[in-house]
Amino acid sequence: MAEDQEHTMMFRARTEETLQAREILLQVYDALREKGYNPVYQIVGYLLSGDPAYITSHKNARALVRKLDRDELLGELVRYYLEGHR
Image 1 (cartoon, one colour):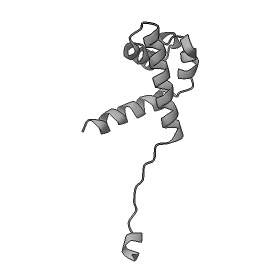
Image 2 (cartoon, one colour):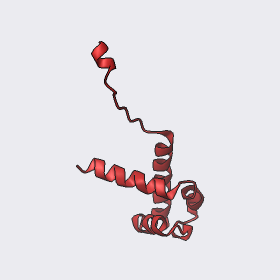
Image 3 (cartoon, helix red, strand yellow):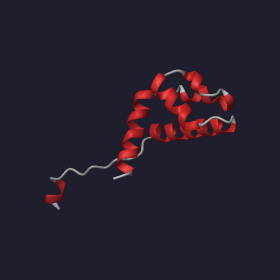
Image 4 (cartoon, helix red, strand yellow):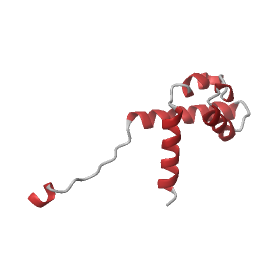
């Protein structure tokens, strides 16, 4: 038992922010699709430029996406992609 206490264990929990970001992205995706846009292109345009005009105001999507920090969101997306495709 004492030996187990000498080792540090890593535990990564999904934070509320990550879950909130996922929910917001899904809502924005759905709103863009409903308006006839290509959601992936529009979201990428927003992430690269920071211009909220890429996101429709339908279903309050533009206001929702502006709640997210773009740098943190990009980091999460890259991390998710790389960890999920190894």
